[in-house]
Image (cartoon, rainbow, N blue to C red; front, side, top):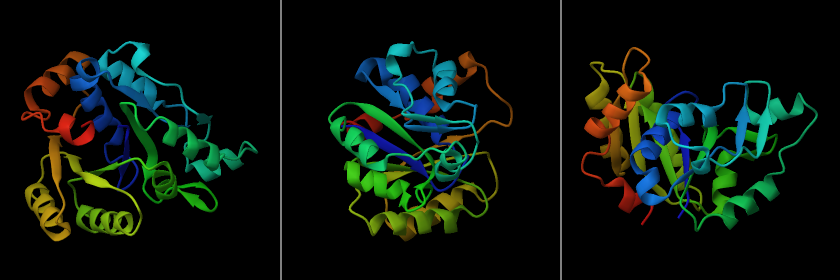
Length: 221
């Protein structure tokens, strides 16, 4: 089963989560990574490839790539183009039986065109969803609102994965969200203050990511 990865906002750690999953499980489970819509020249596909060191066979090409680092609806309009959401939904539906990690652009309510949002795409494609959230100030509001919005749709929410630096609020933020939303905790990852080399990242994957190996059974049963 393919899985859609979205977040509570931009830069909360979706690409890092995908990198963690791919680094640990891509070879053993035969996983592939897919970023349907890339905005801006800083390619998430390349980021995941560089961090994990996996060869290109594990990476599907972007369906759409736009130059402006903005929401897809605006980035496409600036190039006089439109995201064909119907075609994209059908494509994602057609690959849902495969083991593909599909990373969305931004948060769950990011518009892909003026009247079609990421949640519409997930709902139409029938993919289960992982929500990536920050551990920092403001995350309780952002995450609970995102969960509430998702639950109003015909979307299977697999759980929340938290990424962020060490801070005094971290543990209580996570606990408050999990208890208030009564939702599964998929795990947490402590964000380093400095950029890691590939080897440092891979070492952290082995030592810290999904130590009980619960994710394969949840994401790709």
